[in-house]
Amino acid sequence: MDADLLHDLYQDLILDHNRNPRNRGALDRPDHRAEGFNPLCGDQVVIELEMVGDVVAEARFNGTGCAISTASASLLTEAIKGRTVDEVRALFDRFHGLVLDKPRRDERSLDKLEAFAGVSRYPARVKCATLAWHTLLAALDGAQDIVTTE
Ligand code: ZN
Image 1 (tube, protein in one colour):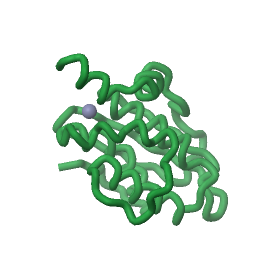
Image 2: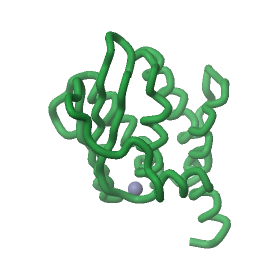
Image 3: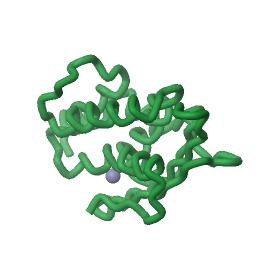
């Protein structure tokens, strides 16, 4: 990969969250849990949630994968804390639109998640960026199977 491509893909925020992932680990008593796998890249992620009513009170992740998948899971756990299930789903729709470069109905800034905008130019990496999100939705839906991006 050339330097420009590396810079596009691995913005400082992504590099930082890959090196120092936030909310990594397991919860003592998760209400929701799901595992995800991206066979294209070999990324694996586990998402655990603790809910208070309809609100995400705690979110943790674990797993192994490339810088983008790890940073995405880390930033996801920060982005969803304190949000309702409906807000989390809306956030996923906006994030998905961002990494696919699809027009978004809701053009409000995604704050730190905007760091993944460059991923839209590298279709193979979109699944790395969205794996944690698909796994999060599976956790919220109570799915028992392992989620795969394929
Ligand atoms: Zn990956």
